[in-house]
Image (cartoon, rainbow, N blue to C red):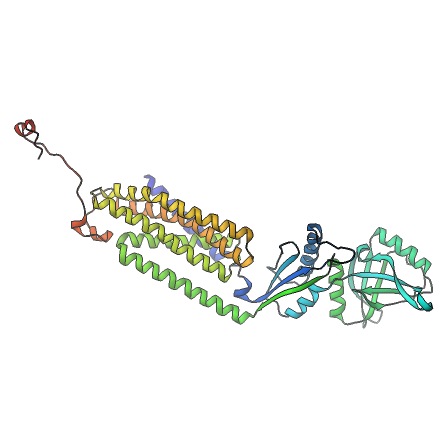
Length: 433
């Protein structure tokens, strides 16, 4: 079996595999296409934490991720931006305000006792037991099943401290504070040595569940305020998606039309390669997976133009080789070989630029850079390997009998220098027929 046939079978296998991936794998869309909320949180230094260090940001990221996961929304994104900010993307959220309130809470649980202060006034002071001593929390009700409260379990260290504290405070109120607000102050009847208890405060079920989620997610190491918010409605997102699809189809259609009109048969072959390119890149997007945003789709459409640009360089070089009289097979090979350097250099500069954008850009810019870089790499494969293989299979190694197939006129085709047998007399005089 010829080498060209083996390569063609390999390409065919890639196409079939890509179609299967496209059919079976879901597509990830960004907030600007499906709707949702994008929040930027900024960490705030406190008296206890005067400097926002990388360790503080890691702890804040972990707590926020736990809270976002508790919202029950899939495909969320939480990532650090700069030295003191977090970017949070929550798609398909039904109540953005609820999410903002939920994520912004510090969720600091404290147990306090009363002492006499200035003018013998009772004041609450810390006992040293806080949410850091918490093992887990869960939802519960009283014996009637009507009043919701939050059950909590302390870790071993916290249970020992809690047992000593409640032993000293029998007959006295124990203040339970959440984010600095007094939630309840039950009177301690007996020492609590098991490390378990509950917090009551006329909670609704939703309020109690939110407190449970916050306590289990962990308190934020420092307060975090929302400094930027962007919410996209699902209707606007769907509209943007439809417009992007139309833009992509129109762009591909116009490019294909130009290639066929100007380059004839090679242009049609380039369109086949472009179709292979579209299938491969879409399958790669689903496998990674790449979150498609409006900027990402723009990068994809731009890479289509760059893929065709490579074919244009190749075809122009091939036409030049035909004009100077090369055979069709030699002209095709020379066209690809001589255009490769230009294609490689231009694509490498684009990939370097994409790498810089991806390393230092925001999430939107990263989406554009990633899709463009993947598109450029795949376009090199389709423009060189796929197009060259199909051209050799279609044209073979014969002569160019129809110059119009390459958009050339017959008189434009050159003729290679040929030598014919001459007479002995002419040869002696240096005459060549």
